[in-house]
Amino acid sequence: MKILRVTSLQKAYGAVEATRNLSLAVEAGHIHALIGPNGAGKTTLVNQLTGDILPDGGTIQFHGHDITRLKPWRRARLGLARSYQITSIFPQLTVAENFALAILAGHRHNFRFWRPALSAHRVRELLPEALARFDLNASAGRPAGHLSHGEKRQLEVGMTLVGKPRLLILDEPMAGMGPGGTVELTKMIRQLQGKLTILLVEHDMKVVFNLADMVTVLVNGENIATGPPDEIRANPLVRTAYLGEEN
Amino acid sequence: MTRRLLTLLAGALFFALLPLFATFFGEPYLISLFTRILIYALAAVSLDLLLGYGGLISLGHAAYLGIGAYVVGILHQHQSEGMPLLSWPILVQGSDNALLVWPAAVLVAAFFALAIGALCLRTRGMHFIMITLAFAQMLYFFFLSLEKYGGDDGLSLYARNRLPGIDLGDSLHFYYVCLALLALFLLLAIRLSRSRFGLVLQGARENDRRAKMLGINTYWYKLACFVLAGGGAGLAGALLANQTEFVSPGLLHWTMSGELMVMVLLGGLGSLYGPVAGAAVFLLLEEGLAMYTEHWMVYMGPILVLVVIFAKRGLFGAIAGTARAE
Image 1 (cartoon, rainbow over the protein chains, first blue to last red):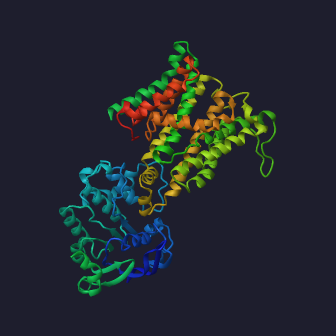
Image 2: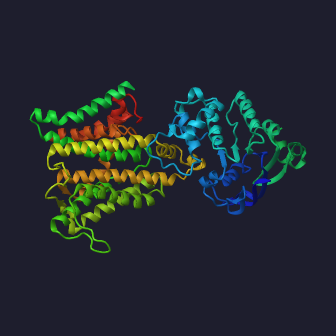
Image 3: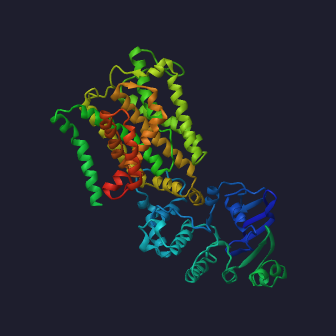
């Protein structure tokens, strides 16, 4: 079953075509990697998937819904989560509150004015597990803005996961991480394999070919090849367009 | 935590016992001065919900204060003239029963906040500040030209509202009514700030885009905050009209919004208790400095600059050691 299906997506900024007639399908349960040189339009595509920007043409189908023009928060409600390339957390709230917000976001509404948020039923149920799973127990009471870079990344990814999304878009999750952090995060993503669908936008080739079930190569806003890692590695078109540049 | 608790207890005790001292030392005017402080504190706390928790910088908060006051004034005028305010489609009589008039003031102010907020919240940043200011000034000029209700001369009340069992005309009774309402509003605001609603609101303030990406439609939460803050200011306006027994368009002027904002910043943004201290210091300074010079703002300005530079968490944060209301 395809959980995400992008058809003939178009987006231009003036004369620059950031997304050109792009079609893409992501199989449920797969880790689908999206690679491409800088400026290939990876982030533009992700922003269209999440609704931060709207395409000029084409459609996006997610889990049986046409989400092409839905507001970001509606897409999130359907089970589409995203972690950002540049860490995007709530810096003045504590780590526990960051998680609590992510946990409560899935509720139909949060117009509850009296009881403390941290003692809400769902929060008490899920928060300890989340803190332990992302190794943030010791920092639970600290403002998220005071965490180290690595811890912020853990929180960033953790927040997207506590909502139990169907599709997780990881936009360069390894960005700015040391080798140790990269290994940790790779392990974590591998643990998720099969449990949910992941669209992984990543620069680090080793990580991509290690993890991905499928790889899509984006060059100049176009999908020039999609296939299993071995096939992509051997694809001459990809080698000249992309891999050749790096080696 | 102890230092914070001590500060709060000292503050509560001070306000609770103030009338005793004022009477003992034969300075009854202090009671009316501090009643004014309590009322402005209520308005400032409501603004702090908006500024400190919603991160919504409204430069038009005085509008809701003024609307609350005008509800009292207009209903009072119809009551004393014996003419209904509305005869169609429903009959609305004037009234000076506080149990009717004050909730009406809150509801009308909240309704205006709903309508104005719904439009303002479609913008952000500088535009938001400007559009809240524009709406407040529109209302200011509306009341200025409303000849039926005094226009720029304002509207005088012949007596304060009536409340069963309590004589609002008595300065001591009125003081404690104001204190009780402020305490109640503070309690609500503190609970709210820690509630699920408060958490979502703070999330939207901190990182609106991320909050949306988590699946929260932040617009409605911000609008609810705007409405709650407007209602609080409306209540303060109703109390203010009763205290001064006079309502004028000046209450809605943008300088009033500015003064409320100064009280919040002086006391400590986002601390909820802080604006009470801010209102007290602001009005006491005004009162004290005005004895020496009519250009008291010349001295107020530098004091404010010093507080903002050296005590970023405001007076409350500096004294209690922590700024966040917890």
